[in-house]
Length: 583
Image (cartoon, rainbow, N blue to C red; front, side):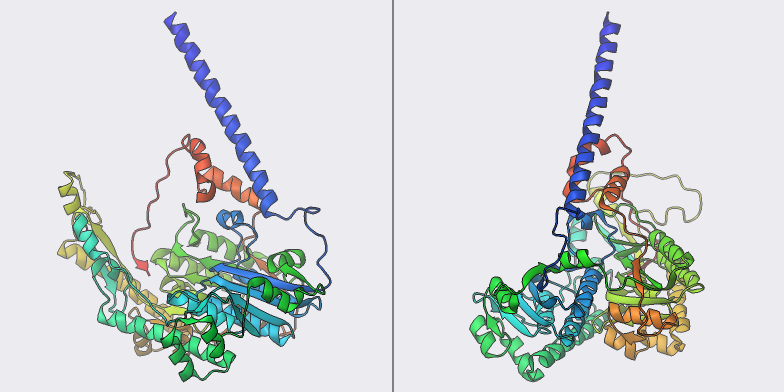
């Protein structure tokens, strides 16, 4: 009898689990359909025609990032365009007689300087085409780069508006480092790191309690360069002497009335007032979001030979792995995209958009090789965005041409790495370890002890080889002498403006300039129409969701909904990439 009862309970549990799985699948399908309906415009649910007279509106929130469309997290966040999408939409509007102007809301914007410079160029081109551009913020700035960069962007408009209760708070430019060496020591942890060379400060937060003098000198020069660029751009746009503008920055924050008096702001009002002033208040024009406009009409680059655009954003890694919604510049994905573009008969050139602080040396070298192979079939332009440092710059060296914005953080030619030693923490916690090792240095990467003198000598030799490889690639790609390379390397970072002067980059330019460079390298005339396509092909939202469910890599927005499903699969552990890092 007990056996029958046991079998009955077992059958009931199996049935319950099966029903739960069916229910979870139904819920998953419902969520997928709902998300697809939310993200993808459905014919019949939105107006089929745009109004005959439009004022475009664009609200910036944080950073735009890339327009690769390959991230489920980005898809779930709705219809927000990436940087390239915004530039494409504004470029399309330049020649559209139905578009009368643009209202740009930068109140919550915190772009990187290079991103702000690309957007400024798009605004200036729009104005040159005869469109009115209005910029608005409820308040400008709360310190750091964000407020200054937002105002720097806004200053390119015909008129700059601010809410009467706001303040003009561009107080300068600040770069603050956070150092946790003391925290690690209290926890019983120690960082055993190696760097090449003295300007390479990526690991100083765990090895020091303040900037070293070489790193302070290096970063200080970059910060002053960025600030000078911003002052120059604002002074030119607002017709204020640079010296007077620097005084205003030193006297900030300024109340709205003083900001108008000092010609920093043109008019005070609210967002609706700006839209009305731009032409949408008299009924002759209708306010239309740039997102709606772009998704209705698409890119201005739709016909002709194809230029493939590939996005390399985030840490350089070997594979995609679990990214927790963060972009990864993975050798696996980039290699496939480059191969696909190189083999596509319709593609005449490739633009690689890079926004990366670096990462794995091995992954960077693999991407370098992928680009080198793609160049045998098609010219490649590396277009550097906010950051192309260390591994991000390493991969750019393989391109035919490097295009930068003046504010791009460039270079950081050097290597760094090591390990965290947790022996004291484990001893204090009563944790003991034991190991069976075969080989003289089998345990050299264990966290339970520091490197021995012999092991450190061998590890430093590894880093020396990696640094030599990096500098040789710089020397060959940029046609520099060994002494010239030593003068720009050793971990130094440069602004894009400096990088051109030092021959680390070829030309200044934004996304549009990179496309023009690709056309030139492909042997096309400047006025040749081209088709610009993202590689790999953007997946629809439902497919991104399906892939995320199958892999267990769901963004936080819906992560908790699938804990039951993921518990039936094997646990996936996030293992950080070890080895030499280009950061």
